Image (cartoon, one colour):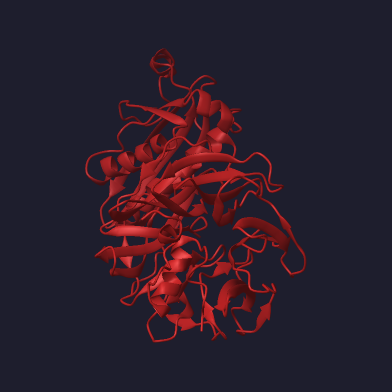
Length: 456
């Protein structure tokens, strides 16, 4: 019988145990004195055709860094791609770029061919987009990106696809602009898996859901109680904890087929699964007796291997380094919850965090340069980042409850869950600088976000 209800757990991990064994003090805040869907691929396929350069040969990416853009957002002219769907494409591209805080989008007149750079320069623009939209059932979107100061075409591509894919084409275009202007991949053609929450605060209905990173195309994937989802870093799959039966189980849901399957059974209560970088295995915390340990589970075979020996400690919230060699996780083995780092194969763990308060979630950036975490001190929840050696700890945002951080594929933005004293959890995103926090619209409340890789 699990008997850790009087101990600290990250709120969503505690909530998962409470689902199986009753609430009785399982929510973290009470311990601290405070209160089936179709696939997401492109319908009808996608053809991307390079457009020959006009005015000059394709230029290299502009020599502007992300840090420079944070200080002075890049002025870029984006005109309308035409009426109807064309205008919708324009709006999505504009929103994607504007929401980063790295671009200042300027309106302009629609045109094709080589633009007149003089008025753009007078506006202070550094870049400009030209192009157009045509078709109905099958559509063609022509897109050119220009370096205004050099008077050169940077990118030229025509996309042909089913009209139902117009929104994804817009995200792809925004990714191209981001990469050509800043020198690193964008993150707009991605999705976020999460738990859609409805009902009362004390008895919520929690279902697995997925949406585009901007909140569009939200789809409910399950009808039963689910928690703690994790997106595969390489496949169109989400692993999650399900309460479809009396025994909590780990499932893997395939978004392309809509099929799901159980990943074995555990001698204890499994908590939130976490993928390895190659997508072939999961690390699952399993609560048993007075503590919990981490297990590595092969997804194909179901074979399990214990990688921590808790000795009664609670070990939860693991996350792999991008190269798969190390794991960061939360443990109270030192007396209070803190972050530790260890080899992915197991063995000795080194304490990573030494700040005041109790640490909760941990997540390693896909860039490998940062570890995101949550912490509570003085009754205040915080979301922060630190270097992988534990230095440089910095708080980005605070709130009544902030938890479940998940990095976007390029490591520049974190999704997380925020809720107030009266409940009402919602998905937010924030830049790693601590600026540009945005609420992502969802049909119901949302928690436990997990960011997909770039769509393939």
